[in-house]
Image (tube, rainbow, N blue to C red; front, side, top):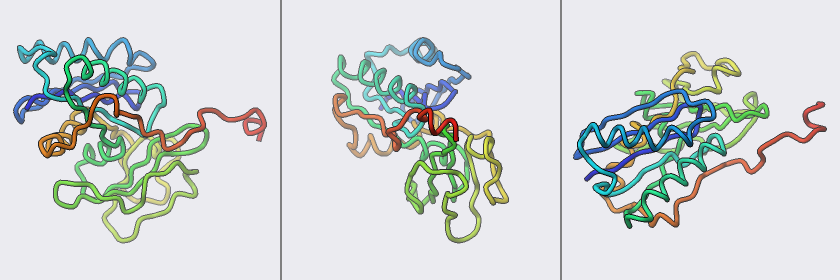
Length: 218
């Protein structure tokens, strides 16, 4: 099986290629240039493996939550690549990819969501899958619930912006990557969990994209 993975939900533009169990990846800080960088980066990966886009069997993408623009870019590129080739697609939770990237087994994921909120969840690795202990939500960081038990590691940009939020072990520099998306997608695609490209949708978690003027004043 060969498939591409796309992750553009944060300031990083991240692409990966799964080729029969081997993964190659590229990523760079993109600012707001994800749309111009993503496809050329994928083409570089394909060329380095002597493959063409026509040889892909599926496309996986970071479905969110995250930057609204970044999620639309990943979803749109995924659909554009898949529709013309009739291959399935699979959306992977950005927070699961963040947990996967951490290397820990119990992870509190916390991404800066702007507007004094974070995208937050607590995930525990059970076998090959991540299970939600605290469901994904958009919440004020001070109000975020703490998961039960010990051994939790905090990961994500929310900790860089708002501090450790009462946790003793945080890794604010860890971010979701296409490599992590590929690792999570491979067994699910092999199990037939891919869907038609037209069914690919971002997972925003929050509908609101800006503060009102009154909220800004407060």
